[in-house]
Length: 119
Image (cartoon, rainbow, N blue to C red; front, side, top):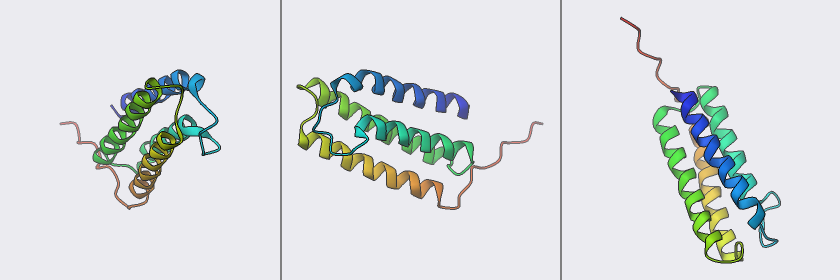
């Protein structure tokens, strides 16, 4: 089940990367750009799941946060020619918050509960 979730998250990230890459502008303040940061955060989440550092509830929350950022970016990109400075700053602020949440989830010492034994 976790593998399927990771695949879905990766698919969403790749879809965002391919649709948003052509609309990237020079107003992206972060050297890697918004799309690269989103991809990197999806990778961090995937690694946390693989390493049993992220619980199911934490994964659901992080996935929702990532989806919200991607949806907001889609709205911004469709509203004009690329991202304005204000829109880029807003997305970066959201990405910074999500990045902190990923770090906290990976380093809080909680581990996913073991699967129920087959009876």
